[in-house]
Image (cartoon, rainbow, N blue to C red; front, side, top):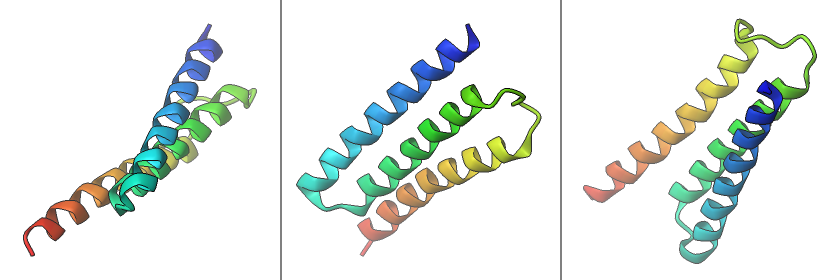
Length: 86
């Protein structure tokens, strides 16, 4: 059952990444590219977590990928707000 839930999360994350890529194509704003990359990383992370036979929540590699993904989101928000002041 856990693999099914992880697969659903991966599918939704990949779909969200595609939506952000579509918005990027329309606006050419880096904000959307960074969000798309973050959600794509999240999808790959969930797929890897579901497919690896001995994967557990305690492994730091999965947390590092999530940290990178969340860092990309924070970077996108920071860059967007920093650019608004100029």
